[in-house]
Length: 508
Image (tube, rainbow, N blue to C red; front, side, top):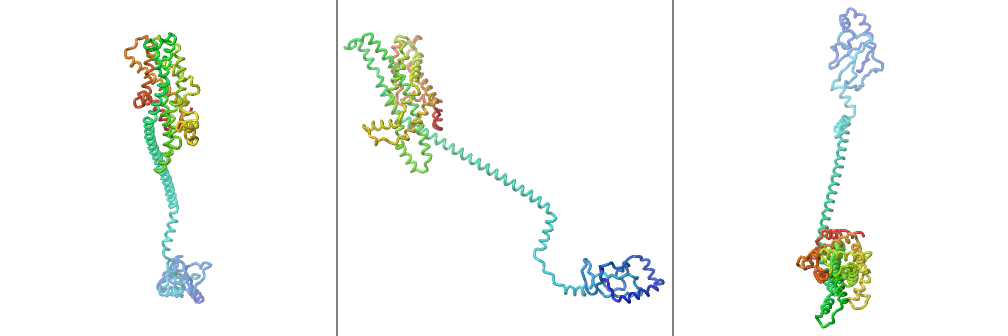
């Protein structure tokens, strides 16, 4: 709204009354009537730079006249000015008011007002940018929030997938490392196993076989019986044998010949298997002990421990069969041979197959006499303390308890060996090996006879000498003994020792 000037009210009212009396004949009055209620009149006659509006309606309530003061009403600036009468003699209509709209002269009241108002503070740096940012946020807040949510979800999914991928990579790397370590361990086990077998083949078994051969030949010597028969024929000055003495001598030769061969088959086969079991168990213990060391000093210490913890004494048990168990073995084998051969007469014909069947029957009878696996006592000492004491007496010649060593390790190794020998797996390979060697021995017998045996066979008396000679190749040294090589090359035997070396002993 514009300020309304009320200067000289009485004069204006008087002028209006006088003008109303003469406006009927005034041509300007007619012009105003033609204009009707148009509030905008011609501004000619007013001061320069102003626009005058003529309101034909009363001033609304609440409109207060303003004199010298001014106020802002955007976008127009209303100022109070002095009323100027129109140059025309016409007077404004009654009850009408002049409303002055416009802008004051820039050099006038506006400058005065600007001088009166306090100076506006300088603009704050970044305020416009902040206001622009607020406006941008207000207009695009939803889009920004949605974009941030999508970006956050994408980042979270990426981190999850990346973490999962890293975990998979770690698992695969760990699996690869484990497989590599397993391969290294397997290779080391195989190399160590071959070294252990080499020690067994070149040191332990040859010495044991040599001692076993001497003991069997000593205990089952039949040369004196053959000499007795020769003397009984009158070839010497010795008196001739009676028929009964001659018969008894032949019966002894028959029993001892088969006892000698069967004992050699059993002793050679079991000693070969036992020494390999022994060295395999010992090699596994040594490998597990050496696998824990980290430097050469500890390795050397472990090697020194080898001779101090019962390992050396355990290897020495390979001689136990030839030293302490051979007598019991021969006795049981002789009983079995007597039981099987008691119905076979010296004049009865016997072919190669019947010889093989007789040997297998004696072996079966022998194993039947060894109840509760008592044959294990022929190979392994029953008590480690007693065995250690026997070894101390044999080495020094007298009973000296100070020579007794710590037998805890020896007892542990001997216990594990007994578990292996009493297992069904070992019994299986033992039976297979005995049958295989028996068949090979009989083939050697056919080769010794040379000429084809007639279908009925040869008299048993003519076969006894050759049967007794079969024990000699059975007890040869390992590098010359084909029977030991045959046992080693059997697939089931190789599988058994591989399983034994890589795992715990089989359960009984």
